[in-house]
Image 1 (spheres, protein in one colour):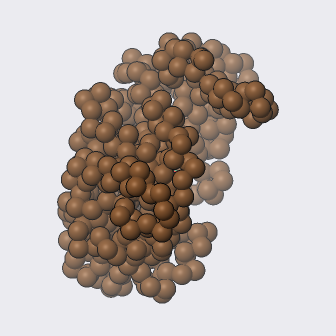
Image 2 (image 1 turned 30 degrees about the vertical axis):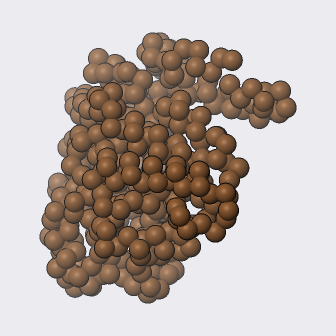
Image 3 (image 1 turned 90 degrees about the vertical axis):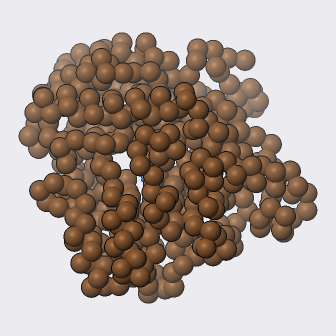
Length: 418
Ligand code: DSN
């Protein structure tokens, strides 16, 4: 691994080696994480890193871009095919810049955007007051029904009718349920608004056909290419053909500079990988494992927000166990299980404390863990919750967690040996 760096900069090499070891020995359950295939790691650092290119295939600002055109065109074709999209743009750097690109394509300063509240499942880039775009656009928000903890579609409809937003956004970072895209798109049409879906968290499940796709219903679909997509740290935007020109201008020069061709190459690989039966099986197991975890944790007295999950996320209300998200996250970290504290709908705690944790099942499913192991993880979590600040308890849980994950290598053994 990192043959050149190991010799020339042992300090950086050893930090990267420590991170590999951390990932190998921990049960990684951050919902926005996954394990990139070796090809993605290779391609993310490939020779395209050296090439500067701006513009689009066939119309570049820099000479020597013919090879770059080939990789970008291949990626675009694969993206259109796998998602059934009319147009695709691979130049965005992340899910965040994917969102900024759509805003840049269709919005003017002061325009109204209707999106989901961050503390009920949305995302920082959908108008949070701490994001700079909240100074540019007028964001207003919808939320979940307090009883079902699922999107209050009637509420969305009445807010849209009253405020006439130019854009309505669905999708986010901690919503564990399916979204009724058809209903949302009808609401948008009625309000004469564009409809955008941010599928960053669920893109892999969508690509594998395990959950419904927003592509037929949305004007724009944005995504990061990590999370369930299991690709490089980057992004993608899809749209209807009628918006293609606007979108491409919104991306470049609207929101990004020169293309990260190395990650375009890695995304292009991923866009083939996510169409394989092997990937589909993993995504199916992700959903099975998530449902199993929700069921097991419920049996131990945890409360699962919305009563369950349809995707890779289990959002847990810790109040019945007398813990906060901060306490539980820190205790699990000591045990070798990595999750993140997360707001739950109508959370009385601050975002720095929270009443919940968000648990993702993608990485462990990629490593081959199935229902029997998920049952063990839930039991460890329950034991942690009983005494989250008791070091002897945490040490006993750590031994169990280490034994469990040691049976499932992060990458095939020998992958990083020279
Ligand atoms: N939005 C953050 C998350 O969901 O964890 C990072 O992508």
